Amino acid sequence: MAFNMWGESDTKEKQQSSADSLLSRKQLNEKYTKPLIAIDRDGVLIECHDNIKTKERFIPIEGSLLAISTIRAKGYKLAIIFDQPGISKNELTIAQVEEMNAHMLELFGEVGCPSIDGMLYNTSESRDDPWSKPKPSMFYRLRDEFDVPIKGGYYVGDRLVDAKMADKAKLKPILVKTGKYLEDEKKINSFSNKSLKKKTKVFNNLLEFAKALP
View 1: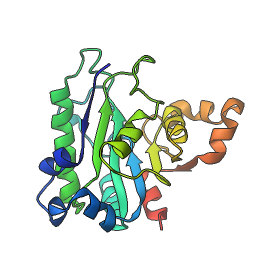
View 2: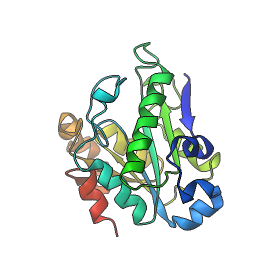
View 3: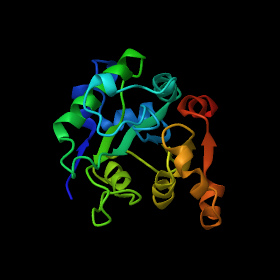
């Protein structure tokens, strides 16, 4: 299945002008020395609505934009990694997804986040798709093709599949109780996921996680 990605150069073009836009990947890694914080979009940054196509339906969760600026200000690498299976179902187009992501980057700039290190999304949830969750392929592409270190990093999601994807990539799984967390809570607490649960930290929301970071 197809997928799309914004890497370093594409992301810079879509961000507001800032001093960071003049930095190379090596310089960005040297400026933001702390580990990667990768964040799911729907349910963590914005409210969950199927196939978000308009700014009116693109609603940030309370405190999530402040969390983004807080994470970057603390010196962490930052990426947005999420899925958009509506594309493969012909319910959503790549152009519509990218329009919403451009809007998100504008919102980041408005709250003082000068840059992010990458934005990746898949286009299906098929088991045959090498990029679908919980496969860790998007993390590996961020690392190998765009030179963003992932070792010692975190992935913040709202579903069990997000925690599984983080664990497969040897990132620290973080779940927030927004989005679809309550739908998955029973599975998260099941005996079969006992080992994963021990590795996973849970916060009420993204801002609470951001404030807890050293």
